Image (cartoon, rainbow, N blue to C red; front, side, top):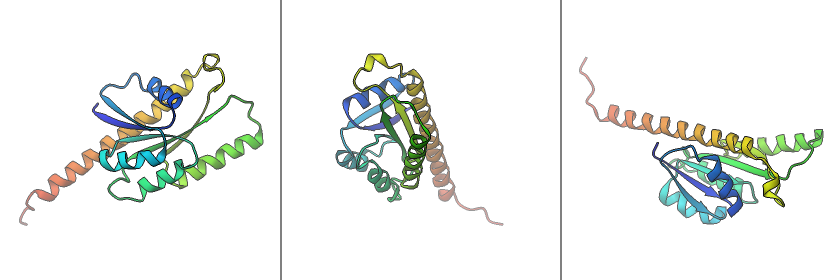
Length: 164
């Protein structure tokens, strides 16, 4: 698979994403520490998938990408890192509201993962890594299908139409 991924987030987020996609072959990873620095990279390189760490400007980045026809096909995965905690009813409602807001504002997927930011070795994040890896694979499949449809459309529009 020849694909590109732009990771937007801090160093710990990048390390998590790299571990999540270890099994993927032929994927190019670019990095931007924040959404403002990601915009010129997106414009120039048009990555297949954006893995964006949830932060203040993350939703605006999703909106920016989806508002442009030539970029709207890019798959945006918004990943919210939360410390491990016990989830009560109010917490689940807040998570659901955040997911709804992200999807309404251009994210193709919103994933919440739990990592112990104080003690990384104390957290077994293999399930979260598999989940994020699966979302990225899903996005790559969608982009690959989109590109194949665009190639077919180009071929069909160039071929002469048969005379009835």
